[in-house]
Length: 332
Ligand code: ADP
Ligand code: MG
Image 1 (tube, protein in one colour):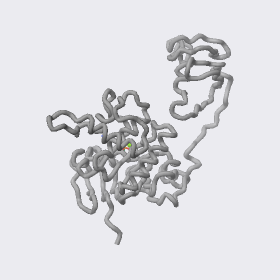
Image 2 (tube, rainbow, N blue to C red):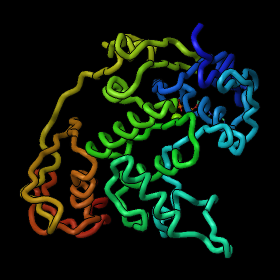
Image 3 (cartoon, helix red, strand yellow):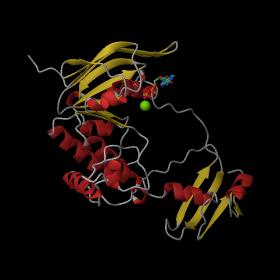
Image 4 (cartoon, rainbow, N blue to C red):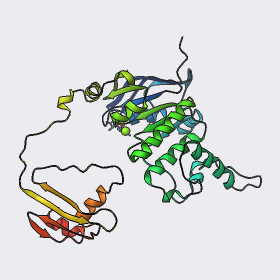
């Protein structure tokens, strides 16, 4: 007989009013396992996780931890049972140190009743070092890049006794190297026999980091596949309920004259000599890692950031954009 799963969610159903959001969900998670929850927007992923986290109450169904039935009435009970949920939004306190944040709400106190900063920093530093995160525990959260804050959030979640860690779209604000760091952290968590539920729609990541993939569509589990047997196309078909060829649809259309032309656009620090055109009836994509300065470039075109030099032409005519209102007047 196989050991009882670390987590078992059995016949979970949930509706909001007349909107049936989850129907008879059965899910299990074993120690040291990473499962993916994959599904389109609105499939019910977050709702399922919030039920596990004691934030929503299921209309039906049961939750077992190590084979024992648990009534996860609220977030406190979820916490006592070792359930840690890392939400997409960062909820750290910006003007406090990493250590303060990690121990927020469960601070160590000295014999004389003062907050034991030294000990909190020591313990936090140990965690950061363990996970190969190269920053000082005494640093202010505000000064950290957003991706690093996300990693601190994860450290915070697992610092107290964790059994089950849920990550809801954890990489959406991480750079390539931070994502790699996250995967190293996940590998360490696996070694510590923690079970992980990983929510993402980035298929490449699921292939890299998960053991099993559970596909949710319209509140139903439509497929469970061992990651090593999973195929990209099949997952997409299961996720959207259509074949891949109809997933990316293109409407026939004509590309017209040049609408916008950017010539040798330079910014003091962010970029130099940017040249591109956008035609009428055309969609131009700008790809890049977090921090590649895509946003800053577009803000500069729009006049929200000051350029150093360069020209912007609309319909072939040079225009001066000093501030956003100029851009709006020009039709941008
Ligand atoms: P996912 O995380 O997969 O994108 P969600 O679990 O957030 O999906 O949402 C599933 C469905 O439940 C959606 O139709 C959403 O509108 C609905 N829903 C989620 N939360 C609530 C709520 N608090 N009240 C009413 N409807 C909700
Ligand atoms: Mg969601």
